[in-house]
Image (tube, rainbow, N blue to C red; front, side):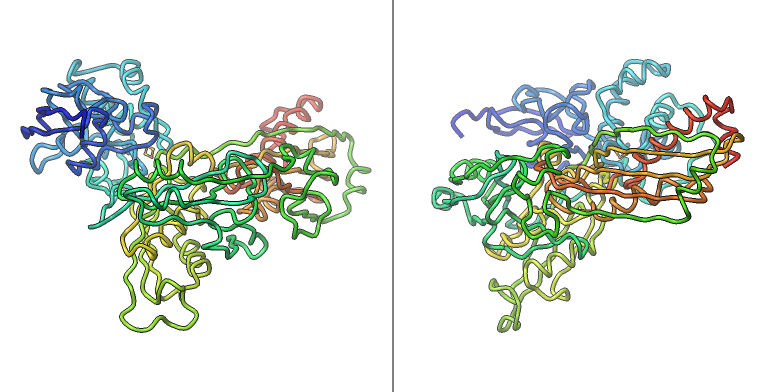
Length: 549
Ligand code: FES
């Protein structure tokens, strides 16, 4: 440790003297060396506030604070907020006001609040909002958090959350907080191209690097998977082609994250770039390469759906007013605070490997994952690893938000499992915030054409609807979304005649999937916007128009 320095810290009241590398951040020191995992890493860029701790009573972002700069300071983490066995008032207020849901942002929120309350005993709402502006929360909507800090009496009292106490004390463990003896770390190499053929991959440089224990490529796990029978188009790592910037290509397991990351730079991948399909307009062209060769369409259509009931043309003929509009709803992503993380541990079999089991052995795999749907992960691991389901256990610890974005199996789960089987050591892989965006599975960008007929009194006579969905590089949950976009359009209203067609395209972008309302917000936005326009033309109050239907 050439640039090491000795520092003194008072951590949660305990004096510590230790030697740290000058490049070590305070969050790395507190989580890694002190095991204070109540401090969370949401972005590692000083943007989200989940890593907030108090330095001499003042909130700081520990992920962008060097440990050496804290020399001589008193550090308070969430584990040091309660008074012995009694919760602090702020912790109790968060519980009583329902100021937490997934709890991932909660330690940082509470410490920012403690910093403010240390300066002002009774701040007003604006002051609280200003003080917490650097702490992001994706679950609560903020008002209950603000109420918890001002101490405003809870409306009716929030029902107590069964897992609330560990969340306000920092005892709740999310996947990245877990550590096992002899655990090593994995990192994934990703494609810099939106669309390219993989000519060759040379992993020898990474394999020779000190501290590297295993390297894998797509050829090690070539079995295709997808959560639906109709979308079996992914592999754990790209096998012969990359289909979006960020597509996983190779993975490394090493003694620590820094070594694993450095080893990625020693993997040499030769690509032959292919024309990229970056819009739905291009996806409908037949002169551009197909992103997946084995579809039944001649362009980059991934799924086409049609559904109708009633005689729509008759409905329009009987209408007093018919209008057509086009709408566009842009794609967006979940931005859950907890990045995806997986930890795999493999116990070799005592006897001879079972017939049909993985070449690595017939043992037992345990995987902890930040997944919303453990059974999808379970089934996919069995398929991809060639193991019996009874030899795999998937555990979901506390989950720091998902909103649909952690519904499917991801590369890190399969890579952590394979690397653990290969090395015989537990392997953890946690995505960076950048990788979370590549993994995506967010809301489909959707273009919509909508034709609605109504009588003079506003009664709907018929609806005709066409949707085009930008699905990104893989099927994901998008097959379902192709149906939902039509099925969710009519939900709140009586629509006697209805027809819809939807087309989901493959494009060379991160794959889209389910996100809060899965496929519903886009058509609901289009229909409600058009309904308002109809209300204005008919001179009917928009609320009344909805009640009549
Ligand atoms: Fe704030 Fe989930 S409770 S991010």
